[in-house]
Image (cartoon, rainbow, N blue to C red; front, top):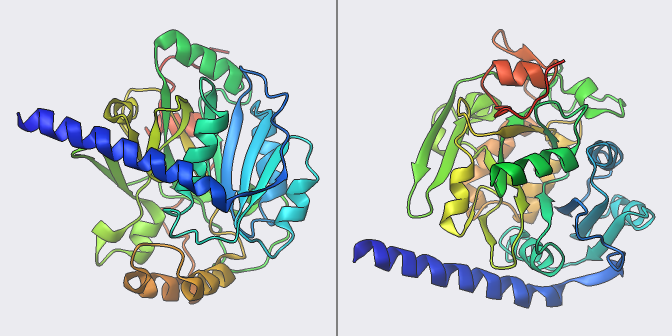
Amino acid sequence: MRALWAAYKLVWKRRRLRWRAFRSRHALTVVHDRTADLAPDAIRAFVCLRNEMLRLPHFLDHYRRLGVTRFLVVDNDSTDGSQAFLAEQPDVSLWRTTASYRDARFGLDWMNWLLARYGHGAWCLLVDADELLVYADHERQDLNALTRWLDGQGQRAFGALMLDMYARAALGADDAARDPLRILEGFDAGPYRATRQEPLGNLWVQGGARDRAFFADDPRRAPTLNKLPLVRWDRRFTYVNSTHSMLPRRMNFAYDGPGGTAPSGVLLHTKFLPDVVERAKEDLSRRQHFHNPDVFVDYYDAIRQMPVLWYAGSTRYTGWTQLVQLGLMSDGGFAKPD
């Protein structure tokens, strides 16, 4: 009876979240809707962003190379030219909003609505503008090849570890390199810790550079690093907490974390580009991130001190093969031998 009651509550939770997403559509204003010719098998990327002009050119290039043919983007009141830039891109459908990012469950209500409206039956990628997905053999096999293989395996979701990338220089040091990975060449190979959480059964992975540098005294507050960014979507699905967890519950078991055997990737996290210090100041003043921003004042303050994240244990990024060897992702048998 306890199990049945728990399952019943999750059904109603999913319905409430889907209803929130449906209502949130009123906050979105169409800038350019280029979805009329959206092919049923097109890989589509969904993005919610604000002031990401520093990352957008490389972000779009990266995912176009991976086979994304349509981007569905919500711009949350950018002031840095992001909206104008996106409006000019022929493969971007763009919505804008001035509504509260926090009140929309950190943009997730808007994303769940667009996924339900434009993603049903298709493979959909939900990522932030500072996340670059890599997976085994991605330089030779694009997302179309990966998703065909996942379909053949009977797998509807593909998990990834969010890997914080950082530079040798102090945070905020100026560098005009167009490719973020020319600046952010280092990462922490470990340690990472993972547990399963109830009632959703979702993984909870923590560790890495931010854990080491900013949350050593209270590691439970460190960022959650597990994500389910790539899903063959169904309008009955919903993300619950960013892409860290989703409903129905069974979807969360598609990813078993670092060291696991399920096919997975890595999201190279480019948060620590030179604009990170100014962004920390803005985030603290806008109070749109975290349920209780006051708890994270020390985190923002630490970023504003412009520390050097690189240390003796840092690893220089060389490619996807290295990430497989370190156990940070698994090819699950997808990669073709040379």
